[in-house]
Length: 277
Image 1 (tube, rainbow, N blue to C red):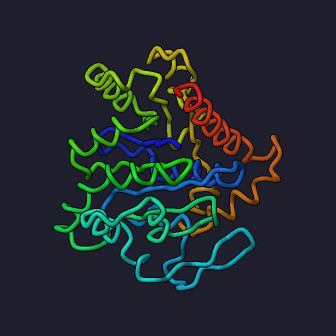
Image 2 (cartoon, one colour):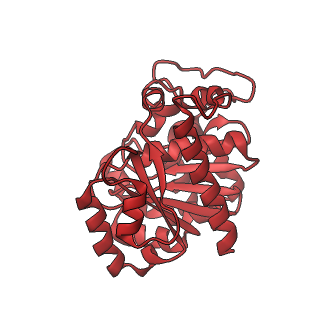
Image 3 (cartoon, helix red, strand yellow):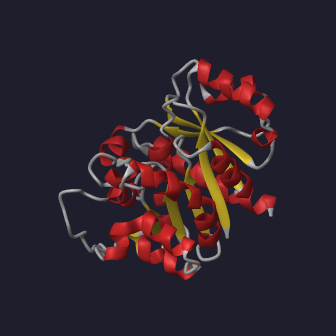
């Protein structure tokens, strides 16, 4: 049971949330883990759009896809969990009642808070305890750590994480900012941190080889390449369908590089978690 936190510095567009959607979907399809993905932002539909069409009240049931859960607990989501926690009634097994299901017994998502913004100030204080409780029930708990989460709460989540995936862009300013921040936060230089370049363009001057050299990284930096089909699927609630179809993709296919890099990120996460135990 491990906590993996996806982190990025500031307002830089790194594709963190969409990278996380790709990685968790691939993990759920190819590995036998019970996974929870927790979105910590406020009123953000990016993750929802990857998996659920807002115009459809009932989710399709396609084999390993689970039917949509439309009960009251689901509608309350994180706010319902926060209330349970404050009343000391929250048990790890109950968390699943407040999630949305992508793959039955494989991938569940605790979506972002969509209530009153003032209420979010209270709800986000509960994230560290909810995450720790979830870690006692799920094999892997992935955290999409949003910049709206207060610094002290973010620090607690990072400290409690088994692995931090630091998301960067290929912009030199982003790389330099990370270099400076790494001097201030030793954990970002440790084996506990894995670097991931999102929306990656292999033809950029700042390719993976040059970034690794620039940062003095002995281990390979991972990438999540830009892929047209994937980014379209993220807008059309078709990410699971896409990854199921890509299982038949060969190395020579135009999408082969994208799928190979997603697999490499997943393999690196699993290896690093085992190595850190």
